[in-house]
Every structure is written in C-alpha cells, then in structure tokens.
Image (cartoon, rainbow, N blue to C red):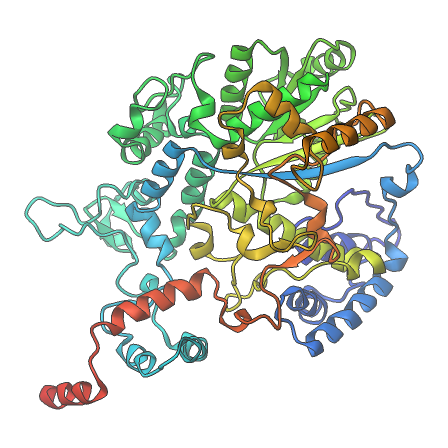
Length: 613
C-alpha cells in the first residue's frame, strides 16, 4: 500500500521487450490500475500482439484498436511522456540509423554449417519434428493422402496437436549412434554442451530420480532444450568472428576446459589452418587478416576508412570484450588512435577517458563495452556510432547510440548496426524490429502507432504461432543469404532487394577512389558519373560536414517502422500468402515428406494391416 507515500518512477524505456514490463512499472506506481496481470494479458496484451501479425483479420484489428485506446486512457493519469526529439527539437541535430547485413566470410560459413550439424544442435533443431519411431504413423498416412501442397499444409495445421515430437519421445538425449558397439558410450562424444550441462556428482544413485547415463550424466526434465542458451551463444560468437570460439591462453580452470572441449569439435583441422595461431588457442594480433576472417570486420574497416576521410570520430560498441580485443588489434594494425572502456576499466578512470576523448581531436575511435558504457556517458565529440553486435533488447542499442546523440552534439549523428546475415544475429535483429513495432503500437501516438507495418506472422508467447520469428527451428538455421529479404521489402523500389545487398562483395577489388565514390552515392544508388558529381558538389555546398547519405548495402532502420517506407515481402492478397510457413512448420513438413516416402498406396497399407493381423 503506497497511498500514504506516492511512488514516482522515472524511466527512458517504459516498455523494452514486452507488455509485462509495462504492466509491472505502471502497477508499481498505481497498483491494480490495469487490473491483475492475468486480466491485463488476456484483455489488452493478447489482442495487441495478435493484431501485429500480418495475417490478422479485420475483427482482430478492430478489437486491438479498441484495446489500444482503452490502455492509453487507463495509463494517462499515471504516465507522462516527454520525448527529447520533441522537447529538444530546436537543440538536437539530426540522427540517421542504418543497418548493414554483412555476409559471413567463407571460413565463418564453414564453421557455422559444421556447428549446427553437431549433436547438440541437431537435437534442438528437430526437437519439435514428429518422431520417426512409428508413433506418428496415423498422421503420416493421413498426410500422404493429401494431393496438393495447400491440402498438405491445411492438414498439417489442423492435426499439428496430434503429433508426438522428437523431444518427448526418442530424442530427449544426444545418444551415440554407435552406442550398441562394445566400448562405446551412450552419449555422443561430440555432444559437448549437453555433457557439460549434465556432468554432475552422482552420490547415491538411489536418491536420484532422473536417468543416469554413462554413469556420470544426470538427465533433467528440460532435456534437450536445457542447452538452448549455450547453443545460441556459440552461434552468436561465430557470427562476429571465428577467433571468438578459440580459447584465451590467459583463461584457466573449468570454464577454459569447457571452451576448449567445444573448440575441439567446432574448429576442424582445415578451419584451424586459417585461424590466427592455427590452434584451438587464441593467438590474434595486429598483423592478422581480420578482414578475410570476418564479414563484419570487413564492413567495419570500410566504414572507418570512409569516416576518417572526412575527419569524423567514431564510437564502436560491442557486448563482447573478446570482440573488442579483435577490433582493437585491427585498429592498432592500421595505425588509428583509440581509447577503450569496458568492465575491467576502474571506475575512477572512466570519466578521465571520457574527458580525454571529448577534448583530444586526434583520438579517432572510442571502443566501448555496451554493458559498461552504454549508459550515462556524454560523448558528443563523436558523430558516428557503430553497433558491432545487436542485442535481444532493442533499448540497449538505442541507449548506446545516445551517448553521441544528446545535448551538446553539433553535428548530425549516424548510427550503423552490423548484422551477420543468414545467422542467428539476423533473427535477433528481426526480434528487435518486432519489439519496437509492438511498443510503438502500444504507446505511440495515433500517427506513430497506426503507422507500423505488419511484417511478421509470428506472435510472441503463442507456441502455435511461432511463424518466422520464434522457436528453435528459426534461431538455429543458416541461410547463405538474408532472412530479411524474405520478410521485408522497401516500398521505394519493391523489385530491388537493396535491403540485403551484399556490401562485402561490392567492396572487393575496389581502389580508394572507387570506395570514395561509393561513399558519396545517395539513396538512389549508382547513376551517371557526371550527374552524380554535380549532385555531390551541390550537396557539399549546402552542408560540407554532412555524411549521412545512404551507403550501398544499407537500409534505414527507421523504415521498418513506417508503412510508407516498406512492408511484408508477401502480404495478404498475394499469391503465396496462405502457403507461407515458419521454421517449425517447415521442419514438420520435411519430416512428413520423408516418412511418406516409405508409405505405399492405401491398398498396400490395408494389405499390410491384414498381414499383421
């Protein structure tokens, strides 16, 4: 009861990921203003989330519109919003947010494909696929009678609940396919993540209710999904740089042993020959060819060269201090000046580093750990911000870029997110877009809230509506291309998939003059050289320090939140709309088709049944 002592809360992010965060913050200052949590979820949150889906029907949209107005009316007495873009509109400069979808290097692709084929990852990727032991035979026979793909898809959607998934049947644990041979263990030796998670002291076996495998692995009720976080973390690392899977020689103890165990199965001998040091131990330095090893590093190098030609100063954020080590080695190798702030930087020294960067124009780059320096710092001496690795929580990236975009900034600010295309990181970015769209729809003003394009089929927290966003089947897949090209298209030029243009390939074999020309190209891409030169000359006369023109291979992040700028690649009314499938549906379909290859005609099936009798 806070009636005698009112609670006042201040936050820059009332809703970061989902509606529950909004509810609990409002409930803290005005208890039960939105009812209890179950009532809020059922009556407000769910209608709003289902209306975000691109296949939402008119009735769903009307209900969501009604509940949006109800929510805003309810929270109005308790919520005062002040956006700096509005309050400080005469003080702040402009901000442009870009995204570059970076192609993985060849060695990254090789490692990524190998990792998702390892036992731990295979178990997760097909956890929801129908088990192939015969328990789903009735489903497969019914599926086999469907003659068209549309019929098969409708059958699958109607009977999905009847399926027994692998994770609840024969594939709970990563069994060794050779376990029946003498001397072979029950658990696959390459299932490193699962083995690490379940290798625990046994004690008295009679006191343990769970299964014990190989005499030392205690299973759990969550198998096999208990290793999901560890698996995603490995893919997240390889998306940035191969050496992040190598073990730091300075590390020791159980954690270093676990990293080494995984590196030994993930980094094959042919891959090791291409990595710094050539072993499972990290040995990178300033002379290593990071541009060849990492698609993101190639893009980062290009951006930095572009910025420095015009005397811009840059903040580079990463969630990984190991990634900052790699970036710093590359920067030193190029002779660029830099400062660094991360979790190991003593608190007493942090303000001194900030002051030095603010006052010393010779320092070109400030490397910052997003966790340590994503909040509270004033770094207006920089006007370019590079987010090296995106986060599940979109507000973290937004707060990081605001280290430069704040009062005192005299130049326009450009933020660039680097996203490894076709990987888990691109799905993380898609989740960011989903969350921001939901937030804008929920809390935005009429113009902002109504302007959100419906790009995705997936609905958060609905296990039957995972679509292309949610579920392990989506997160653990790989595409030698871009996922976003299948989801979103620009309204500026629907025929051109410039949103996923391969920037890395455009940079190959270009000299400095060509790179400079590329940096000057505007939104409309390459044109006649003479005409472009005239346009650039005119542009430079207007604002000689403006470097916010679109670079080929980038998209404007804010276009994801405006119907006028783009929308779903396949929308309602399009030919293939009804036959679109998310990751889980695709896995189930593949399993069904494989099972049906062994099923004969209906008559043969009947004969077989008679023989069995």
